[in-house]
Image (cartoon, rainbow, N blue to C red; front, side):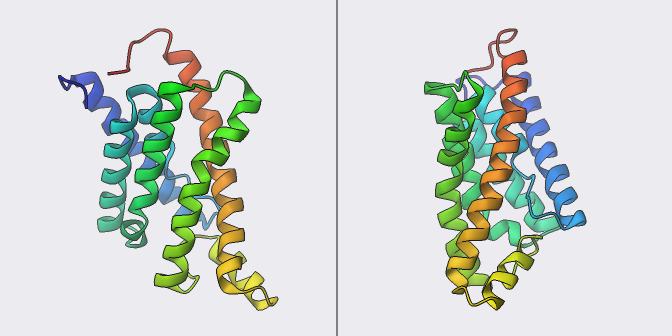
Length: 184
C-alpha cells in the first residue's frame, strides 16, 4: 500500500473488487469456459502496483467464496499470483506494443495454470463450477490422463482469459496512466 492510503486508492480497489465479482458471476451464470474474475485485480495492479493487485485479488476470492462460489476460496492463490505478477510487469516493464501482450499473458497465465491444475486435480478430481470442466471431462473420456486434461484445458482457458483481460486493461492503462499519477 502507499505510505498514505488515499481515497483514490481505496476507491479504485473497491472498483476492482466489484469488477471481479461482476465478471466472475457473469462467467459462472453463463457457464463460460473463461473466468472473467481478474479484470479488477489486473486493473488495480497496473495502476496502483503489486500490493493493490494482491489486496484486490485476495479480497475478491474471499468475498466470492463466501457468497456465490465456494470454489473461489480454494483458488485464491491464483488471484494473488495474478495481482503480484501483473503489478510487477507493469511496474518494471509495461508492454508498449500489442505483440508484447501475448508474452505478458503467458507470463501471467503459466504460474496460475500450474497452481490451478494442482488444485483442480488433487482437490476436485477435475470438476469445478467453471464451464471449462466439461472440456476436462471430454478429454478424460477420450483417454487423456486426467491431470494432463486439466492442464491442457487450464492453459488454454487461462491464457485466453488473461490475454483478453490484459488487452482491455492495456487499453485502459494507456488512456488513464498519462493523466493520473496512480503509482504509489
